[in-house]
Image (tube, rainbow, N blue to C red; front, side):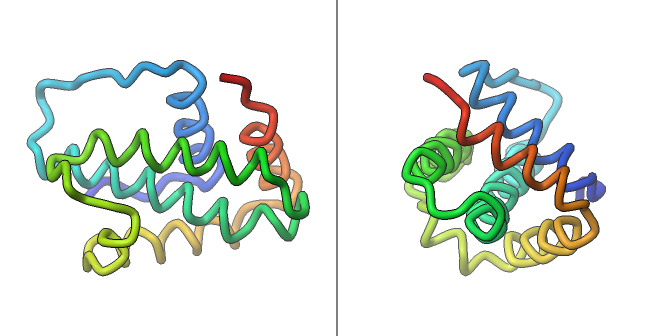
Length: 124
């Protein structure tokens, strides 16, 4: 499994992927490794959904942009029928999500706000 990186780093990478609208293909990754990366990205977006409203308040643009992030990450998943609801029952995903939640707890409120603002300020 890929090592846990900081909440801000993980979310910044996710936002960068959304902002660039380009996913770098890495032919050296196995489908299982690529799926794990997608799960990490989805978990980071889910943590943003859980954390950001308490920091920035209810925000329709934030909701829309996190939905876009999740959908773009699901497109990279090997099982094209995978949905956000279905992945919630995946054992590996649950573990990754718990790690992302722990990383968020260890991240300063200023860093969390910065990540949340990045998502809100994204313009397609």
